[in-house]
Amino acid sequence: MAASSRLLALLAVIVGLYIASTFELPIVPAVRQNAVAVYSAVRQALNPKPAKEQSSQAVFPSSDSTHGSEVAGAQEGSQAVFTSSSSARAAYTRHIVAVGDLHGDYGNAQKVLEFSGVVDSAGNWTGDVDFFVQTGDIIDRGDDTIKLFMWMESLRVQAAKTGGVVLSHLGNHEVMNQIGDWRYVYPSEIETFGSVAARQKMLSTGRIGRAWAQNYTATSRLPLHPHLGPPNTPFPPPLHFQKDDSEEDENSRFYEPNEPLSHSALSFVHGGLSPTFSNLSPFPTKINALSSSLLAKLQNRPQPLPHPPHQYPGLPQGTTREEVELYDANGPFWYRGWATDNEEKACADVEKVLARTGTRRMIMGHTPDFTGIVSRCDGKIIIIDTGISHAYGGALSALSIHYTFTPVDSEEGEHRWIEREVVSALYVDRQETIVDQERELVGDFRFDEVL
Image 1 (cartoon, rainbow, N blue to C red):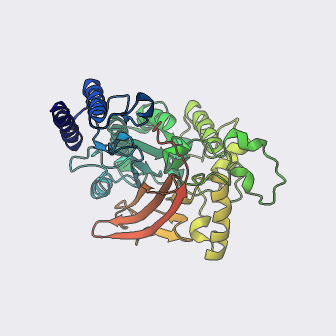
Image 2 (tube, rainbow, N blue to C red):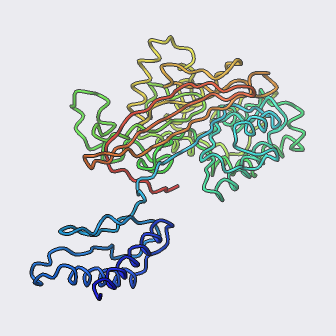
Image 3 (cartoon, rainbow, N blue to C red):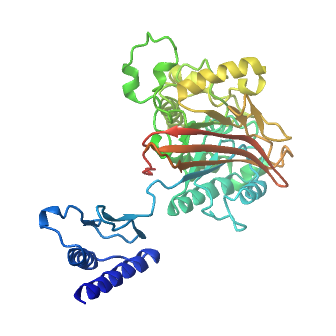
């Protein structure tokens, strides 16, 4: 009779634990301890053995869990184990939207950002994307300069509140205006500032100039996975420069061959990253340092009379050779080779640049195609200037990148993942897939987000 009572008590405890696990209720330590005690007592009553032969026991996690649990079993000679049914290896996603040259057209810019999911109908950040990237040339050829730059700064603040990021780049037209080269400035746009002097002040030490200095870079390296660090983590890391340069592959010193995610990143720039540009590495650190230095010299000099009608001011006194190279035709603000070179040359050259920058594809504006976004060399070169501004009358477009990193069950106990990247061109009336690639990877990867 006593044994039957204990058996009923055991069943009651097991049923209670089953209910708790099924409905994901917490199992407190007292319940665990009572279950162990009742289970042991019933086993002893139903099948008495000397203490030294009681080799089996009920094992429970020592810490509380708010996740569901499953009763693994309480059979003779085995362990009763309560294990968590939740997986620590959750799928990781990252969504990026990039937009090219806007050239003074707030209305068309808002249309593009709205249909690409970056902003709502009121022009406010939706929180539906992780990164919004603009590749420069917001200024010139239109009247909405002030409105556009103030909007970008507002979106930057809104994005940060929801964990999003706005990455902004200087285009050749931003630098031209800072130099005093106003060939593409409309008189009606100058009127929105109030005067030539007021425009010069706002672009140098005023709100727009300060935004350029603080929040705009010449180029960016955006990792698709947080294992590679936050945006603009330099590649290669300083340690890589200590490697022996005598290795067979001339590019291998720029990356770790055994690191499967080393090139799971994108580069963004206005013009292009020339294969012969001498300051590619470390990327993007070197280029951005030169850009910041040149911008500071331009902003801090007495503002010259704008050209036209006055003489072209040129670069400021004290500009270094590297800064001159940064702004010349082979530099990141002006380079057009990725748009103009033949396919064979472009596809050979892009491999060299991707290896040196730790990226898998390059995204840029500057050279417009009014019919749509251009993809070359299997999506390794993507040119997103489609003449959005009414000054051109081109296609309204945005580039969308959806990245997923999904765990795969493995009987060998290895950490396996499916990495997938889908790159699409978005238009008002359609969406076109440019890249849809996936691969399986093995490894332990960091998922901590540090921005």
